[in-house]
Image 1 (tube, rainbow, N blue to C red):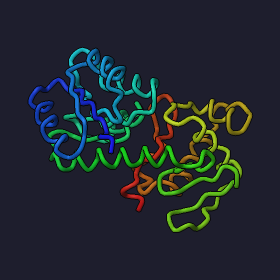
Image 2: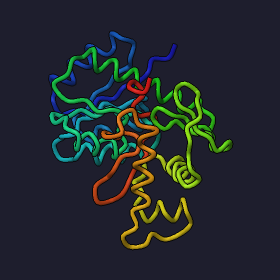
Image 3: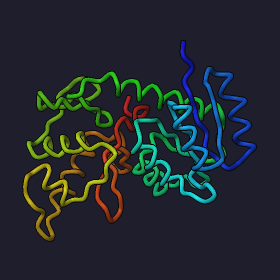
Length: 237
């Protein structure tokens, strides 16, 4: 069996050394670098399945590097940071991260999260293109239906369905309210019109395990919304 490849990008040498000792014992091929330049070189030569990426690197922001990775290809990203509050987690998810973990951490938990991200990525590749997971639910774009984890139909209005289809076609892309209105409803958003926000609030109640802490349909302050595929799997089950 081919060993899955992990790339660690962190400027803390002791942490790199610890993970390079620990993760290979659990079946992974691991390389580690200290900065963005090293990351870019390894992306070309090593072709990792997942990048474990520190947010607070010297010289470059981990968020910017996450966006760069996402633009190149569909590589898993697990972000590490000394700050684990909600705004930082949301910024990491909006940048394209698949999971987010605060330092210090227990190596066994990081191992579990790595395995979970890689498993979700494999499920994404195998899923039919017309069936898209939104948190706890699955949208059938051809059948114009959505089902919950028990297989029961989730009621959607035509406008809610159209909005979900737009998100499904633009994963991990920040979309403004104006863009969402034009793409989903073929009209411009009028001043003071909050219909997009209202629909997203309603959709969160249907697809998010915790609607008050959304991690599937994420708000990017001052910019709009972003759909983060395959989020919340553990809490959805």
